[in-house]
Image (cartoon, rainbow, N blue to C red; front, side, top):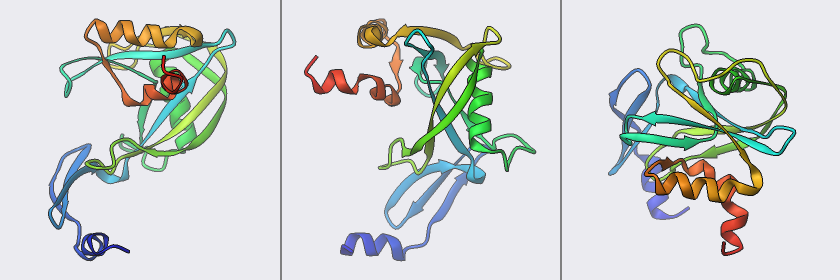
Length: 184
């Protein structure tokens, strides 16, 4: 263990501010943000039988513009849902946001979105056996736009959205990785 690592492990975590969904913390000189009340997140990779990936577009207040993302949602964020099964929550979020119900939801593991400043993690799920059951669009005032993008055209689709000024969620790298590594 490095001296730096030991120093941070020895310092207690201190809560500086806590809201309904996030909490700002310090540990020694380190500042970071996490989710309140152990709220988790589920991200869904949904590809239909025609090899279209299901993406969502949603205005994100911290960015001040729409963002292109994989469907996702918080787990245990509403009163009474604290013990919700993460796979069940992911399936619910997929249906609310996209209008698709999955026959199968499979966990692909837990990932950390920005470990240098955020302790939040998410579980990535693969949804298969998709059936359209509604228009989607989210709940309340989420205003989610659903996109069906052929996997073979994902890089061009993302590039076009970026050129229009849309923010691109880092999790989209999951779909762009092979093309980026090949020097596209």
